Length: 294
Image 1: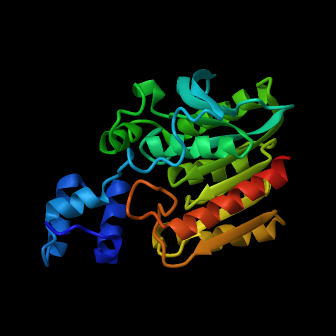
Image 2: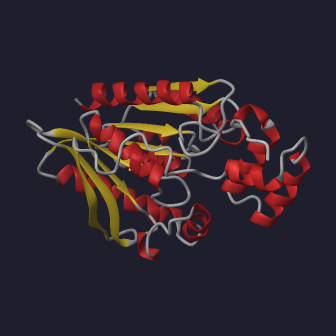
């Protein structure tokens, strides 16, 4: 069987995966459409396996990294799902209080990639909380397909309240300096944008390829850093109107578009990952939080 490389995969396959990952294609239909690209020694099975997340080999920070205290906590979300579980991470041997970051998952619950991302942010000198919006349904099931199915059962505005409650949890934490930012990916990008609208005390927001709010943009007080994938036509279509509103209301924002990369380019676990763009976007994100959160 031919060993696949990212360079072997046509852009149409990435587009199909995006549709599948965002519930526009059922698994059977996705597999049927993949068969068109099973040529030249490439099988449908190898394509499917290559496109699916590989978590165990793509961690950047070990779950037991000795530089961190990282463990699960639960907190109350009375306007959302009730009791929410999240991964709480804090650097060891801290002196003084640290700023906090809410890390928001994609449309499939708190999977290993988001946990890894939360630990990465903590190593940069932040207290992080990565909630699992699937907590009321039993939590992330260990499988992204099942996670997507579960997350569709929840109301997204109730889930927004779960992440706002995470902001409150961090703000009240004894080791937090009271300055809180949010970073989110895909669905989490939408949550990040909406927290900027809804949470007047939010100190900074970094949505990665997240859909945009269309109302109450004048209420945004937090500075924004918006990260976009150049090939992500679906999300990018809403950016011109959002940018126009941000300019109209004099909001503090900066936006970056990374050319020739796909939606999900920051996610280390799939072949959509683009190392150069992801590392640049992450450095910009951490520098932005250090500047805005102190």
